Length: 301
Image (cartoon, rainbow, N blue to C red; front, side, top):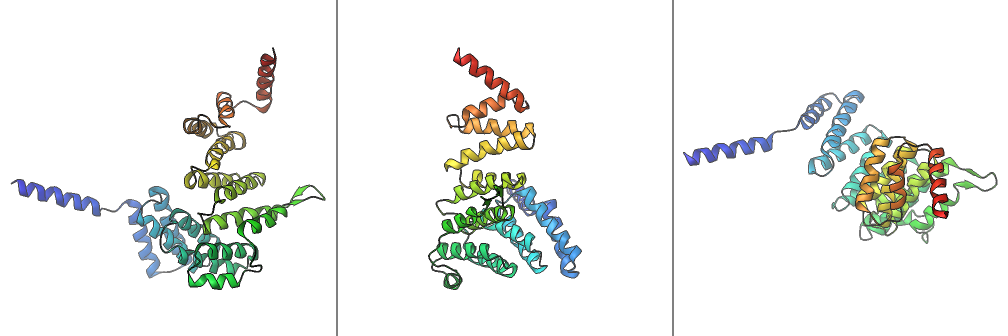
């Protein structure tokens, strides 16, 4: 009797393990539809199903990794280059230690070559050669580098210097967008470079200057998630809270991230500012100015 009960429990356990989530079932169904009828609409539906699975289940399990790669390749096959690059970036950033990283980065470079983005290509060639020195493709990419003496840092600085037009004191928005893209490409291609968090931080601040707030928040999250021990990790969490507060007027999320910052970094240089902003959440700049002036007078007395 006891043996029969154990067998029943075991069979139920196996059945539960084998059960597929609604999101995975949707992917399987859409995959079958695409296989029998590979059109733009069925491809779009499959990419949507894959994206939904990733959004619901996150990027921690092997199924998500497989689905991200499937979405990247499907997008590539349909020549949806921007979409494909987004999925490849997700894969490279989330799974930096997987042995297929050289292959995936080579696929990104192949797309960028098709798109003829010379500045971005130079960054990717250099990053690949630096990271995968022993890979046979490293020699091929090194041969494509216009100036063999340049480094990732010098490439980014060169782009950065072109962001501002000193004669008219205006931001060159095209070069600023290129700087953000190049910084992302560099860190995506070689996440272990010493200046990775710094490059992403500068890119985030440039994105904020461009008023591309979603991009800035994405870059802050990248730093927070992947470089939490770097000094930019704390700065990025504070700036994320401040961005929700000041730029988006989303005080619910601002409160959440200010509190998260204060819990994690009680002695940080931004701690007093975070406390002040949290206490006065939702107040206008004029109101904050008056509060600060009043405090200044009280301290002077």
